Length: 318
Image (cartoon, rainbow, N blue to C red; front, top):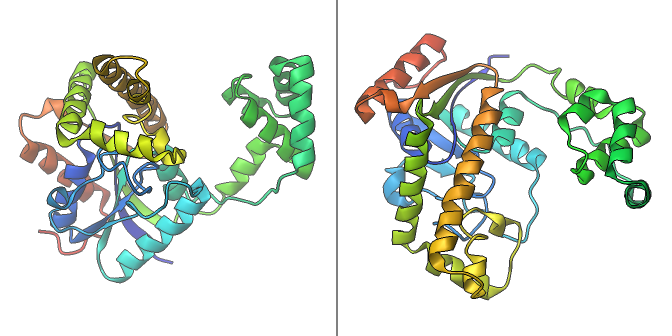
């Protein structure tokens, strides 16, 4: 079966992904598929940096602003939905362009991870939770290290939900969680992907972009948007977005606005670091250090050359 051509634009927050994805869509007759775990939810458009109509330049965008904040949405849900959208775009002779900063979404989709239903058992979880209270987190982690050292190496002992889940999977199936993950990647990816990673050679340049982005969000009305959501009282998953939760102490009159804004900028930098760590482990990524170029046009030309070298099938190249 012929593979579906896919351009992926990923990288840390404030690296310019949206603008690049839109220009590539115009260049290759494409449509953009979001890979952002916060932009899927309705509301908080400023806080989650959803592209507005002006930024979209008429390019269709998918998987943005479609889910109520109270609804749960797993990685498996995302891969299933994004795969369907990408197949539809491809069937219409358009180029699917995946764009976002949620590394787990992107790697799971591109690497064709299969999410086996290993089931769950409330009694097992309850028993393991009680054991952690009685004997401590480390004792539970040591048990995991004996059963599944590969998973234990990647999970901190204080990340109790993941430790318990790994032990639960082993008790239910007799197979290590690490082996389940290996099995989940045995089918070849259906995508012929060209992965573009945006970053800055000088980390301080990225931090400057982050600070500027937060300032622009404030100008657009970030505080009023978040206040309205806060006063609405429905603080669900979507409202864990950076930019919202840091303002809650201000709404509670517990600290000043300037302090909260500084916290937003700091937490956004920390998030960018985590994103970069994730994407560095993504196979086949082509890094573009945008601060090495003196114009947006040169960045775009460099990316176009990378796409050409991968020889993926692009539609209506302009």
